[in-house]
Image: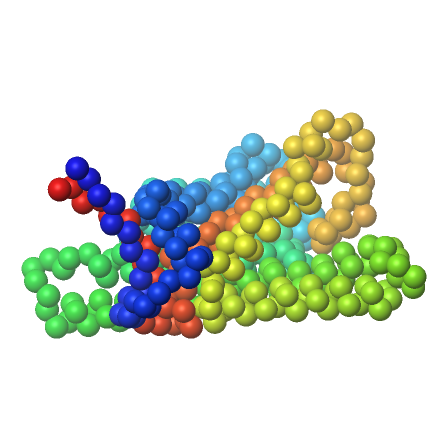
Length: 346
């Protein structure tokens, strides 16, 4: 016979004398689902999503090399040699970094994270988008996800058994690596909400003034109703971001933001729909190309890029859901929240 033993405990925290209905529901769900398997699969999905934008961009470099050379010229690079070398550099760094992250959970994965982080820093300058706040902050959000992943990989190395026994120097090295990993994770939490801070500062206003809220308010009119909606939305987003930064309820908040980001990407960047259109479109949101009339294929390529950037943001948030905020947080300073489902055979 087999029995299912389910635990939902905070490390080093006493069990409460009674549990609420919500907690009983969680226990009932966990009794039917092996959460270790769910977390493992979710971690794989998160890694795939976070490298999605790098893989998509590398493939664009490979199959649309001539267009990328033109993009370098539009971005302000005057040397014809750089028009060729920069796309080649992009292809090499992004493809190698993504493959290392996907193929290795050890030192190779760490090297892949460093390569992609370096690319995130260089990317806005290469395309002349350093003045595009949305572009820069979305890249910062992806960087935050890479830092969370890097922190997890560093912690995996600290848990690996030491060869030849535990010397004082080796133990101190592991201790230092653990502290570094926790600090990297905390920085990653700050960066991962960057794009949502931009949304709170700009997008909520644009969305609010598009609403018809009654007398004195309407599309393009910033009346009291519109101001109230904008204020409430901005405060809500800022509050959720603050919870992630300080590590309070950050797993649940990150999941909420990930679902919201996914739905927003599907709604705002439906790149597949442009593939079946024959009309021209006005380019918006790209520094150096504002107001340009482009064909449907070019617009699809533009929206596909931002769609996969959004998917990488979703992956960054899912990494936070999987790995948690770490000890430098309000929730897990005494240890990670454990969801364990164990099968014992009698």
